[in-house]
Each structure stands twice: as C-alpha cells, then as structure tokens.
Image 1 (cartoon, rainbow, N blue to C red):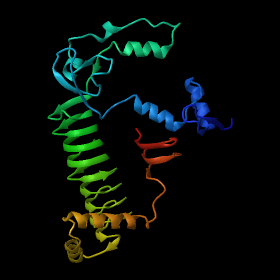
Image 2 (image 1 turned 90 degrees about the vertical axis):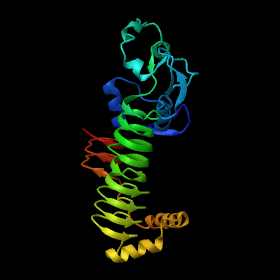
Image 3 (image 1 turned 90 degrees about the horizontal axis):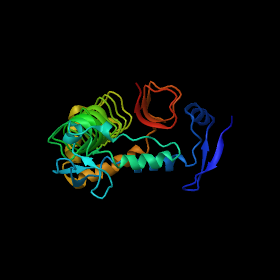
Image 4 (image 1 turned 180 degrees about the horizontal axis):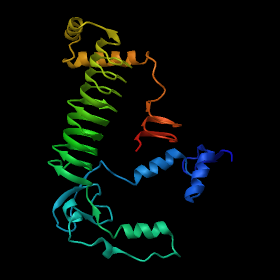
Length: 296
C-alpha cells in the first residue's frame, strides 16, 4: 500500500495519509479521515474545555458554583459533591438506541439529558479555581495534574510545590516561568531542565547547579552562557548582572535568547524510545508524531 494525498474538506490544504495509517484504520474498522491532522486536532480541542471557568448554579443543590459549562450551555450541571453523591442514578437516564437514526445526532441529544460534573476535581483543598486533577492544595488556576500544593497559573503539572507559571512539568519546587522541567528547584525562565537547582534562563541542562543562560550542559555548576567560573567569580558576576532589577533581568533574558540560537540542539528529546517521531517522549515504541508522553 502506498501513501495517499488528500485535500482537507475543511481548510482545503493537502495532507498525506501514510500506509501505516491505512493499516491502523483498517484494524479498528474506520474510514480514512477527510480532515487534515491540524483541523482534526482543532476539532478535538473545541469539544473539550478544561481552563475556561463560568459561574452558574448547580441544578440539584442550587448553590452557586464554578463550571466548565457556561449558563448558556444546554446541559444539566451538578457540582462535584452532588455529581458524586447518591442523590441521582445515572442508569435511570438510559435510552434505547435507534439503529435507523444517525449515531451522533442521538448521542448529542442524549448527552444533553444526563447531568455533567461542573469541574473535574478529586481531593481539592482550597483550590476552587482549578480543574482537571486530583490532590490539589492551595492552588489557583492550575489546569491538569496531581499532587500539587501552593501552585498558581500552571497546566499539566504534578508533584510540584510553591511554584508559579509552570507548564508540562513535574517534581518542581520554588520555580517560576519554567516549561517541561522535572525534579528540580529554584528554576527561573527555564526549558527542558532536569535534576538541577538555581538556574536562570537555562535550556536542556541536567544535573546543573547555579547557572545562568546555559544550554545543553550536563553536571556543571557556576556557569554563565556555558562558560565555567569558580564559585567566587560566579558570585561576583551575579552581583554585576543584578537580576533583581527588572530592566537588568530583561536584558539578561534577551542576551540568553540570543546565545541559545548559537548552540546546537539535539534533534528531539527522546528517552528509551524505539521507532518514534515527535518530541519529549520516554519509554515509547512506534509512536508517530507524538508529543509530551511517557509510555507505560
């Protein structure tokens, strides 16, 4: 079987369906897609809301709540306490399926009759403005994750404490504006760093301590723009940089971004992967164009 080029019926841009894709569609018994991958992704995103919160009332207990459904949505919404409670029976909403009618039309009509949970929360303590996770304490606008405490403005994080502005990271403490980092503390404006501490403007550094604007270092300390300094020299440089002043901080940030463009990068961040394409994968096999995933 050869690949096939089709035109997306939504955006009218050509896209390619690979032979392996056809084999998978045949395996699960579905036709080949008529929308390109980007449009299919947008359609999936449009069907699920995790982060936009609305004020409305619980249909059962009538109290004011936050929900991922606005009051204009044609659906029944229960607060988490009522939804998980014994005051209603989900099976009582069961209906017979009509094989002569369109499945999706029936599903949409059925979906409007069954109560929805306002927010996906499990064991949340003082974390009203958060969603899609479990074991949150004192969190604010954290959307997706588990075992977080004193975290604000974050998405897809877990086992993180005392941190702000974090994305797709885990096991962090005292971190700020960091993305795809893990098992680290005191990171500021870092990307893809692991097992490190006290880094600023660093990218893809592992096992590093007290570095600024570094890229791709392993098991280093007291480095600035990948240049090694002694501890005393590093401390003097820190005083000169004076990152506590906003203008100086922004100047150093801009300089680090320029320096990062001069350093070679690994083609992708893979760990224990076999025959995969994408980015940020670990313990995966035969994954095509996949991102941010740790296999079982």
